[in-house]
Amino acid sequence: MKKKIELAILIFLIASLAVLNRNLEEQVSSDKITVQKNTVVLDAGHGGGDPGKVGVGDVVEKEINLQIAKKVKQLLKKEKVKVIMTREADTMLAGEESTGTKVADMKERVRIINEEAPQLAVSIHQNSYQDAVVHGAQVFYYSGSSEGENAAKIMQNALLSIDEDNTRQAKANDTYYLLKRTDVPTIIVECGFLSNAEDAENLCNEEYQDKVAEAICDGILKIIGKENGV
Ligand SMILES: [Zn+2]
Image (tube, rainbow, N blue to C red; front, side, top):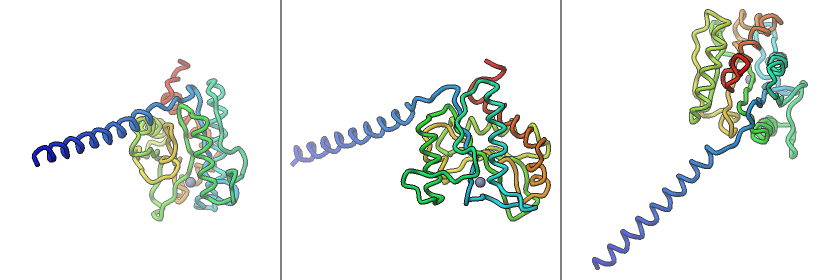
């Protein structure tokens, strides 16, 4: 009887060790993704049949996202950063099995990011809220990613420098598809609130867009360790 119990305990211990070992292996391999240094994916949110948020003065999010993304691309190219855009036109992204749905669009964005494996992926969006007073840029990161958190905090600081009234802080999120499914550090930059009249007006203004793009570019250079041309 005693031997049987000992044997049972032994089997249990071996099984526990096997499970523990597997978990450790998964942990290590997920940290082992090789990223392409000096490469950034810029993702202009929405497009085509998906306008995103429509704000004060019928400002359409997908258009502002793309305008700012293109400006950031130009600035990064000057700094010799390799830039991959998920879209450069007013289109929804289509996967191979695409049916033109939002799901296919999001999957395609994630596929591009994971395939390119950039040092950083930045998804550009504009926010909206029922309370029109709410304003200011805010950066989101995946709650399980310390690299994402670090990147988001650097980017948030870069964006605070262009708006002295903004007191928002980088925020964790564990539900956004893009943040959850990408293998590389990914942040979502909400440049402002289209539901706020001042933000909406600013975000349509070319000069303000330039300021936002410069702040995003500065943030990216700091995150990827290319500050001051290093
Ligand atoms: Zn959006």
